[in-house]
Every structure is written in C-alpha cells, then in structure tokens.
Image (cartoon, rainbow, N blue to C red; front, side, top):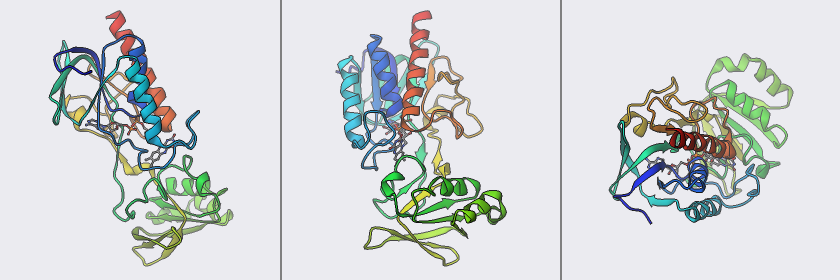
Length: 302
Ligand SMILES: Cc1cc2nc3c(=O)[nH]c(=O)nc-3n(C[C@H](O)[C@H](O)[C@H](O)COP(=O)(O)OP(=O)(O)OC[C@H]3O[C@@H](n4cnc5c(N)ncnc54)[C@H](O)[C@@H]3O)c2cc1C
C-alpha cells in the first residue's frame, strides 16, 4: 500500500539491482520505504542474467519479480511511475511523478542507473541478444561465434582481446586511426585478430541470425556477437540537476563509496562514474546495500 500523505523515511527512485537491494535492507531495518520506478532495467532486453549468484540463466524479469516480492514482504511500498523532478530541503525531500502525484520522505536514494545511448545502426531486438557493451555477461553464450568489437580505440581492442577465447573469428573496428599502431593492436594481430579502421554505419540481420555490419569505408563484416565500448552509457542527469547536486567530471552526481552526495538528504547508488569499483549487476546491488547502510546509520545517529 502506498500513501501520498505518508511521511516515508526513504524514497528510492529506481527498482533495479541497486535500488531493490537497498530497499530490502531498509525494509528489514523497519524503515518506511517507498520505491518509485519505471519497469525497464538496463538488462531487461537480455533473455537471461549471468554472473549473478543463484540466478545464472534466469530471465531478468523473474529476478526482479522475486526481489520486488522480497521487498514488499518487508513492508516496502511500490509506485510504478516516472519521477519527473525532485527537490530537497533541510527537513525533507519530495519527488513528483508523471501521474501518481508527489511523495515526501526524510531521505532520497537515487538508483536510476545510467542511460544507454545506443548507436542507431543496431537492428531492432538485437541489443542484449547479439549486441552488448560488456565482454563478460553474455559472451560465453556466443561461444564459437565470430566476434566483432566496435568502438573508438583502446577499449575496443581490450574488448576484442577479452573475447579471444570464445571467438571463431575476431575483428576490432576502431574509429581512431591512431589505435592501429598501438601495442594492443599488435597483440590483437598476434592472436589472429583483424583490425579495421572505420565507423560502423549500418547493420542488418542475416537469415543465420548473424549481423552484417558495414563501415563508412564500405567494409563488410559478419558478426555472431558484437561488443561495444562502454561509452554508450551516459549519466541520467535530470534528477541530480533538479536537486542541484554537484556532478563529477563525467556528469554523474559526485558520490562517496557509501552513496553520499553533496546534499545531506540525498544519496546516489549504482554506476556513478566510468571507473566505479561497483562492476556489473552484483556490483550495483552491492553499491545499493552500501548506500542503504549509510542511510540507516544517518537515520539512527541523526
Ligand atoms: C543488455 C544488458 C545485459 C546485461 N546483462 C548482465 C548480466 O547478465 N549480468 C550482470 O552482472 N550484468 C548485466 N548487465 C549490467 C546490469 O544490468 C547493470 O549493471 C545493472 O542493471 C545496474 O543496476 P542499477 O540498479 O544501477 O540500474 P538499472 O538496472 O538500470 O535500474 C534503474 C531503474 O531506475 C529506473 N528509472 C530510471 N530513471 C527513472 C525515473 N526518472 N523515474 C523512475 N524510474 C527511473 C529504471 O527504469 C530502472 O528500473 C547487463 C547490461 C545490459 C545493458
């Protein structure tokens, strides 16, 4: 049950790995918690989760259903709606949703994840199935395929090399010509890989299910799996900006490892900069737990 007039201890915006993990800890700490979120999580397009203990091969929606029911069992309330804006004062924080009204609490935890800015050439339905931005989560499922790493330079070459052991054929497409002379490029060639300098412009799905990529220079490459640079992720800035939070040089809220932002009532969790130590799904969950612990201490110690 949610109540617009209720004063919550904590509002969590975002019901992903980070937000739901935080909500469960806070619910179990007998705090009045409201989670406000949209349904789509970053890994929702994938058909399974990997590298998540006890959940290998499980559909993402099933994992989230279980986490939501765990949180609800500990008294956490849910509103499935978009938070359009938020404000934080000295006494409380308020979030305004698209169609469910406003809610207030003593503390706010932002767990909205980054935004994936996907290249327009990815064919419909292939993100999370054939095209990824991580060389760990779904690569084994494409064992024996031809792998293509696509991006700018060094990170693309790293992704290609990290996929070597699965790849029947290995190609890196880099837009920065300087990358061709790098030590990593030499290593790629040593390992039997091919380096293409160019930018992917189009891709189509072949009857085999593979993708046919075409670069701006007309080079065609067949790919059974594509790994993009992580640069496709950008910060979800609307709420941090509305709250007037200090941002780090990458545009994410400046956040301590325990989730504290520049506003004492506002916490932030999940991926907070490109070199965050919190890696992948369990990293986001762990970052949510850390932030929830800090909020709990804050509520207890004053
Ligand atoms: C295709 C793909 C597959 C992946 N597969 C794996 C895998 O198998 N294993 C693994 O370890 N990692 C995987 N990852 C990485 C993993 O999904 C992320 O690390 C993890 O989801 C991050 O969790 P999060 O809670 O920070 O963000 P998210 O899971 O993105 O959750 C953020 C939540 O906030 C909501 N939200 C955002 N803005 C608002 C707003 N204004 N109002 C209300 N709600 C809002 C979103 O809708 C979402 O529900 C994958 C990533 C991708 C892109």
